[in-house]
Image (tube, rainbow, N blue to C red; front, side):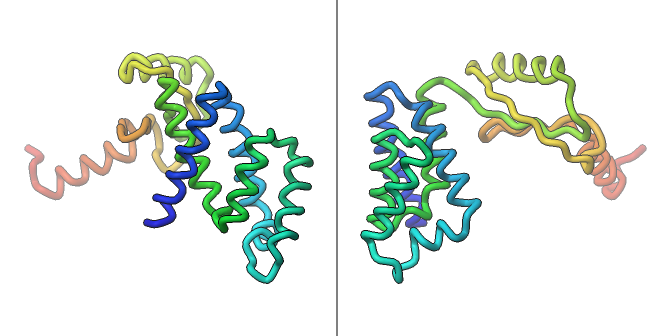
Length: 183
């Protein structure tokens, strides 16, 4: 619980700076990239979080990493601060919360469409347009494949879920039969 509160505080701070400098998207991309590197490298995580390593060594490592990743001065200082305050492990949560704040500010809704097979581009566009009509926001759509849904689509956009999968329909039929509601 504390980690969410802390992550939210840092995400809001970066959001405010990004909004002031009109660089919300740029900072989000840098933060996402850094989060992916951090999650993909246990050695780096250890070097930045292990109390055995001195703080000045961690600061030099972060400086070198910032140059290598071509981080902006703001993002470089941001991640250095996270290392200094021992909050670097919160980067994935900070990135997620920052994305939500930025999306809300820009009037964007992110949606995930799950289908049993890969969707054609025209189907993706149709789903995106329908979601934009329903939500009244610009929709950024991503897709997933899950053969277990058998057919149909499951669409998740924030708190909304539309489940039109064959799997769910079969489950509903099974429940009706169990209750004896079949005439």
